[in-house]
Image 1: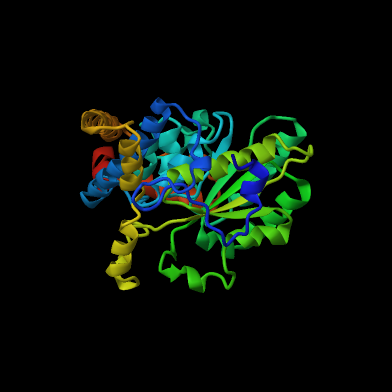
Image 2: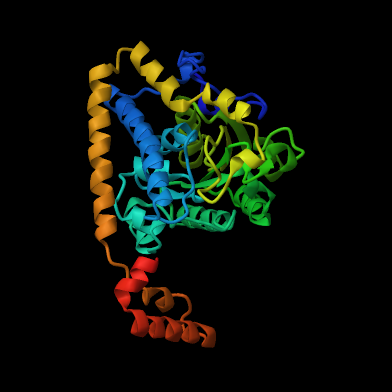
Length: 372
């Protein structure tokens, strides 16, 4: 069995993999020691993410939800890493890692955010997930601060940050990692390298051979992983968590995980990826689809069959139907957008509220909601 210290001290250019593109085990010593129910649960959540993605994009195209960021192709990294965490571990994510929410028990209120209601973010607090973050990379210093606070309070949990490769070009990334290395905070940084930061390719994002090696400049380990392999992501995240909470030398250490994967769809529903990338590249990456390779692994190990897949499909369809209905029946209060912006309203905020009131007087609440 490979020890935690050995797994995380490899050369950052040595990509860790458990399953090949066809779902065959290539590193048996890294297969997690999980029961069959947990393996099936991981598969179910990955399938749910893909179907959720398709459904939400369809609803957005119909004008029933707002702009949405697709996760298709990245299910393995998000689900695999979250299953390796404890329930008390805090997750802070960018805006594409819906899989982390799914793995923690998907609250229907999460969809309210994509309908323009911030109550969708508030619903995540009970899952130990911080609000969705749109501003690139600015959540990273907050993650480090929370991890440092946990260390000072002797809390036995880690704080996990998800972000894209584009965030590594932000100052917040470097400040956060430098602080994490100096103060030995129990944090795990997961860089979801999906090859594109909107239309900017990885080769234009950094001159480093890997993103993982950037951790070395700040005094801790960085490791590169096949992000489309959920078992590899589980193994590495589990090792990183143990290094942060159960250090052999009494010194908790952070880890930077670079998850190599590919965004199958557009950056958001407002993007046209055909303008900047070749469809042939997309098809090549689809040969590594995390869903099909994990399904092959489960079938090959007699954990999954057609009957179980059919049962899972029906369960997912019912769950999605039950999620969407209460969102569309929910009535948001437009006044709330003015209540929490500042402690004291500014002149401009008062003017905007008065303008909304004038529209309400002229057209009524129902017309405003329809316009939304």
